Length: 323
Image (tube, rainbow, N blue to C red):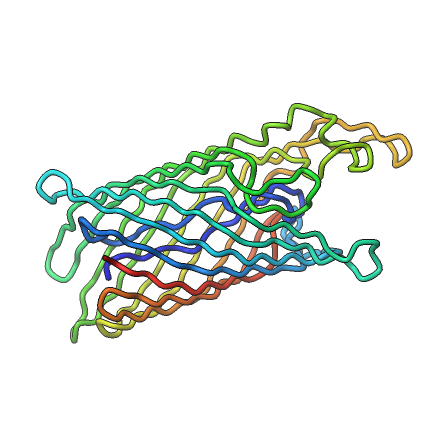
């Protein structure tokens, strides 16, 4: 197996990380994908947090905890180009799942929940031929992805699958490999990119953001664009087993939205900057086990630091098959 797929990132529309943009970016195909193959990745993810990092980086407990279970079937086609010097990759991700906000037992409603289809992601990339010099080899893999707002979106829900916005994300990925004795190897996979976020289509209509009792919805922000970097450090122990560390960084521009500048009894909603954006640093470990054309993957990540984003953990199990 010559393909590594990264954890699915989060983007948070709400000022406290509990908003609606769950699928921010999908997987990346690192390394050298085999040409002329059909690859499928059957993946289940779990996310949970009950606190967030504030604008100054300190931790604040939330009145409600958030959990998400998401099944992410991915379908990848690869095709050699120009006498196998390049490999084209086309990928589609169609997520299904459930997002739940567990409220306090003293609340009139114990929980808010949303389930169904998430935003569809479409990827296109071209992997270069691997270049070698002694024990060192490298390749580059530029790609672009588009998020299609096809998810199960509901203005009245405080948690949703999908973000109700188009996103375009050009990314440069690649891999450096250093071969060690006894068929062992160290590999560094990276992804650096930028996401242009269209924002919520209803953001220009103030009446959408009135209280729910007056016909308004729960989403109040228009998230800024994002810069991100993702790194895998892989240690290949045998041809069948490798362990790795994954570290990711995401930095978002300012969040703008409608805030109540009046009083509780006489609300006045004004479009303004809610916060200066969020950032998130997460890191964790995983293990891969290879059996012929099948790879089993499992990993756990933890938020280490951030601004206006969750303080939680994420886990994933997956089965990758190449045909």
